[in-house]
Image 1 (cartoon, rainbow over the protein chains, first blue to last red):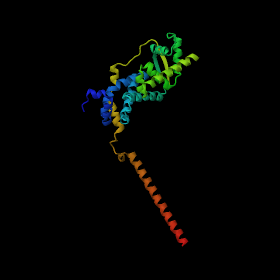
Image 2: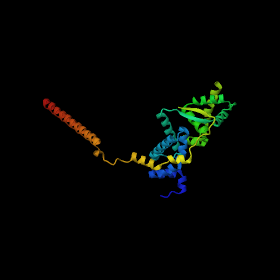
Image 3: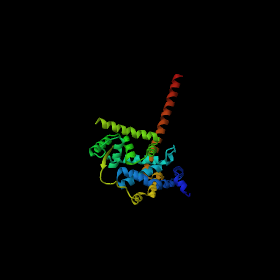
Image 4: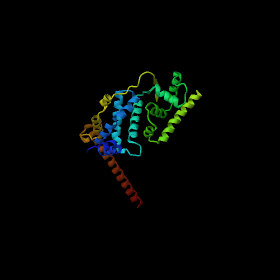
Length: 185
Length: 87
């Protein structure tokens, strides 16, 4: 079958093709490998491991493409969730702690969001780091997406399959918690 | 569990397009998929170990069915005996 650019750009058509013929999954692979690889790389910080995890995630997606149902969320949200689960599985299996390296600029952005004054003060920054380290895993994941992976609220909403308003609410609730924790310190 | 640390010096390293291409291999993925999905070429009964397992399962099934037959036959004869005694 000839794949026109229109089909290639339409995820739902690609999914339908892949559900009929598994070899057509190659189109999805071609389109999204790089994005998924970078997503995984940002978490594992190792090129080879990111490659392995990415392949594993794509294999799982290929296996489960039949079960995929379009419920309004973009197809990429489904792919990212599989990749995210694979990353978590990798860290659980290897009993390693996911270490996230934050750029100073990103840290300052959080400080501005929670209205902290001395954003250049290293002690304050370290305090924020320890506050971030005490977050629940599900909360730190959303903070990761928003501030360190630079996801828009729309993208976060797609990732969790929730509404944009809900994504905003979740982020600000966590920031509020960080802020309250700060005041009590 | 995750821990955060600040990077105050280096700019974040992002893999180049060439590096990503190096790990991109759909034929390997396809091969892996086929390996997991497709039926084995050798039929189960031609595999020595599987043959023994199948044989064992068949023997147990025959044994169980014979035991069942014997039990029902015994029950039948017992019931006819008690009927004769009552007469």
